Image (cartoon, rainbow, N blue to C red; front, top):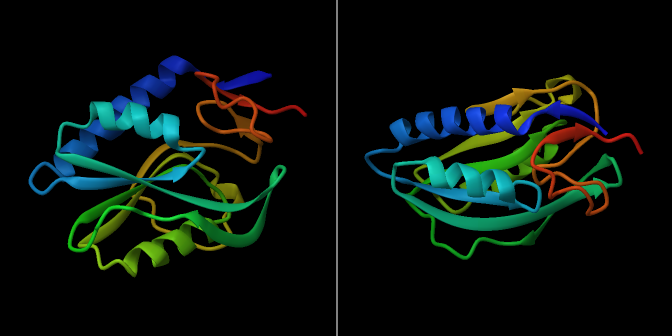
Length: 168
């Protein structure tokens, strides 16, 4: 597999994003909502670097079959934490078409938070079919299927500490 983003570049970007989040939420804190499974490693590294008060919760959605999004988004694990009147920062691994993100944002707003913002490690803008707000972006990537740093292909390669192009 060909490395697309090195461990060092990821570490530097996580530090930068965490610094901006820390500044933005230093007064009121934030609930980091991780969309499982792909974003869990990014979330772990990110929350350790944020200096603002943070709480963490998880949701899980499904929309992928193999290397393609089916467009049919379902929540398969719900929040456990009360988020009413709290700031939510949705932590994503990758945003491509925008359908999953649009669905999750709409769902989170049903919980009446103070705000909902989005942080993604990877943004595949070239695949965007609907516009969605992204407040913190790690890297913009092209139309390639990537694995590592939490991202998988059929539950493999999540453990890589870098991001690589999958050459199945």
